[in-house]
Amino acid sequence: MISAQYPPTRSTAIRPTQEQNVNTKKAYKEDPAWIAYRNQFASIYDEANYTSPLQSWVMRSSHKLLERPFGAEKHFNSVLEVGAGTGEHLDFIQHGYDRYLLSDMDHHTLEIAKKRHPISTKGHIEFSVQSGDQLSFEDNSFDRLIAAHVLEHIYQPHKMLQEWARVLKNGATMSILIPTDPGLAWRLGRHLGPRKNARAKGIPYDYIMAREHVNSCNNLIAILRHMFPGAIESWWPLPIASIDLNLFFTFHAKITKEQHDL
Image (cartoon, rainbow, N blue to C red; front, top):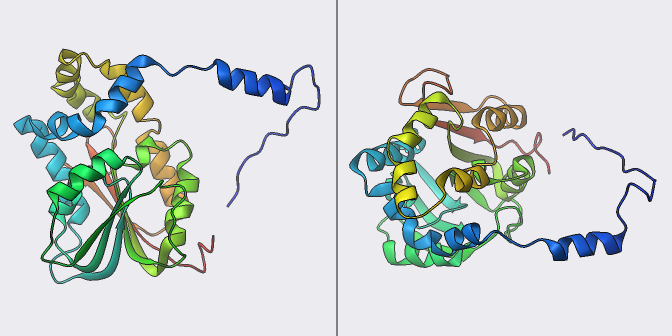
């Protein structure tokens, strides 16, 4: 992998000292609107995305799209879902599994997921508070990794993808689902409901989304294709490779450890 690095200047007049850096960090104060949003995130997520019949249908269609290649005849011994949130994606899993582990860095959302999925007829379910960029699992631990509506939120997605590949076995599957933000169809869809509903609740929607969706779809696709060539791609609602004409994109990569020995 190649990463561009910019050499730091040696001029102390330009480069802040360690003391200056500390003072800068102390001076930063998080925005109250962001804090308020994050504090209520777990309790409003399902309502915000699945209350409206139209929006619920769209969101459910995205989860169905990600699971389309894996029917009931398929079986994965061990599955890890990162950024599992309130556990909504597990409802759409068709394949069998021995172990399905839902992870998220927000323990409040996992508590909702636990209530949502107390048992499973397919296999054993586990819950774990984990940061997706520093997973506590050993190398080669899982047969499938699922990240539904996660990668668009990550500041350094290439590093996150490296960490995800690390915990997957050779020949395992990495399944990614992302929105086509900032495509035309996605931006239009925002104005048909989510933006209006959020603002009615006092949430500064445009500001929140600017901080939530920090990666554009086209940039993420470029990174995914570079790191995992030959993957299976799908689009929704149209079977056309277009960010502007679709709302969602899925990517299923087969991990080859000889190529991604990280």
